[in-house]
Image (tube, rainbow, N blue to C red; front, side, top):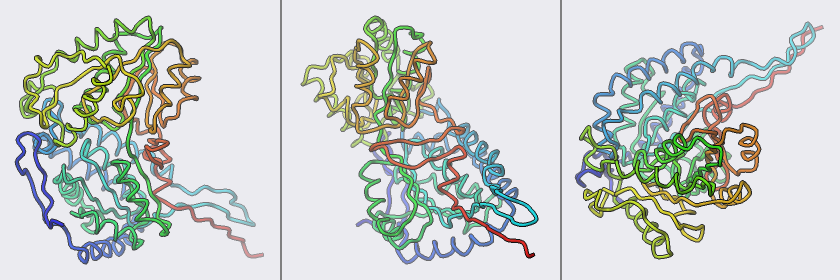
Length: 461
């Protein structure tokens, strides 16, 4: 196994960054430092921890001018869309705002006879294994509340976004968070598994593939370590006959194509009522045909390369299989001569699709979307549930009661009405089925990062 991690830029296939892998002994030593530092960190007043986390986020925001082109080099997002600071700040700020109220003791009785209450204590060292597609926002989902709750954090970031962990730790250390409280480690899979199996952590948060999630669970088996997993997705959109058609097309197609389709809660399949189907498809084709595929460092580029050639290859394979089974492509390849057969992949809309095709069932995670005509709510619900995944579902209607009723029947973690592809930090971020387990953000996000301790104190007679 290589002792070096290399970030291969999707722009030109060059090595953009590389870092040596931390040895197993050094990794265990780092965890030991984190455990030792945790005692002092947890003893600090929560207001001080909140202040330091807010300051760390602010320092990270000051790096935006460097971070934006760095992300373009590492994972291909066009610079025109800026960095992720707005989302990072929104999520961290919300979790900071609710922390004291959420984490305060739950008092059952406070009388002259008894004090009975439930307090919440940090779980210890939290391991965050973050993905490359939104590398800062996905990491901050756990990093901020974990630190605020009094835990120490070890961050292992994706090799594709190798420099993100360094950036985050640099910012938080500059803000005053002690070095051993928040550490970035360049770990390989074997060392990561060994750390988990050795009960090094009080909680492990992983965002990534289904296979990766299984590996985390297997490493944690028998350790009773808490695990939070956000894995694959195949999020559907359903457009009903009373929908605002223009808004539905604009939002769902953007949800399918933004970031080259590499969004955790991106739209991967769309179901449209028969009366709106033709108009929806026509408008969708007009939007996608106007994209500019190209170098993400060019401000005119609206669609950059996929983060890795192998990701683009999977999308091409799914698309080719669908075409062989009778699907019809609607986007003209002549509009996207920049498609090089490698990481630069043209967007595509498919009709004539069915659930016999992988493109409608397996996670694509790329700029392709299938659109199907449906006759009624029952058919749409059946198709939306015909998936191994369940992260979000987007419903388009003017009828709130109808959307809520349909939402209750969909196997998903979040139900959207008239919006899509958004993470609200005030709501629990969760999934079902092969999308994983656990709850991030919102007040529930603190539950995984703390443990309850009950106090039953009887006053002397």
